[in-house]
Image (cartoon, rainbow, N blue to C red; front, side, top):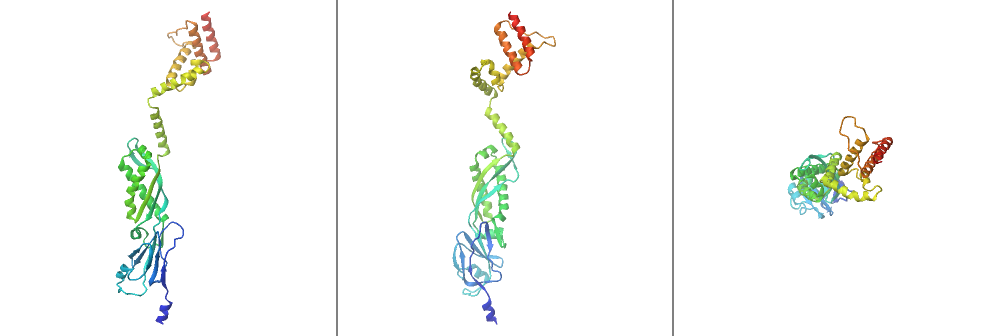
Length: 342
């Protein structure tokens, strides 16, 4: 009867894992109550590792290769079991496979703006995002720190933890570096290298190796970005007085080509501060001549020759086109000025 039970008992004689799909970092080999046959074959493919766990303790770790499970290939497990060197009986042990392939295009980003102290802007809130890649490098550490006895552990299970580690390290780096936001945004490659160096030790703690880390964008929230754009615009303008002089110098040749000559410069340089002041003075003089004084004030000097009369009429005509004087007021003043010439 005992012999029949032994014959009916099933043993595992081939242990291997063929990955199906992406995203699995660790999986427990499904053996249930089966025992591993002495001399069974263990196949660990490239980009894999295998771990034998006996009664809660990691016994042996295997890299890529083909193994016959004997006392020679399971020295630690043999020691834990206190077997003789030539044991030839089946044994029980949990077997875990781990994928050591590169996990690519892992995205990170700040779900909410993080607050940092900036040399140029004081306290600012900023956002950043990018991608990174990593691989499992130490199956023992990963099993003890992360995956444990779970049937399967995936990239998606680890994603949130790694993203939080990235954001925490990034916040610390920004605070320690004292680099202004403008310099961060302009040197994303250097920022990526610094963050990668800071994160490598964090990943190593969990049995992971950080392969690459890229900062794709560093930005401010929309309301702060508008303020930054305004400041950049003011810096580009620089000395407002010199900027206005440049505008005037550029516009005078253009005005001379238009009908009306220099008299039309006001329409082309409405935004120019210097010309604006000139036009304001002309308008004030013309208005004073066109509108009777309501209070006792010094009367404006009347035009004394034909050139001055023509110049005054040009200014008054400009006020009509702007709606400051009516056509009737202009005609009345025109008649008055022309009468003085007679």
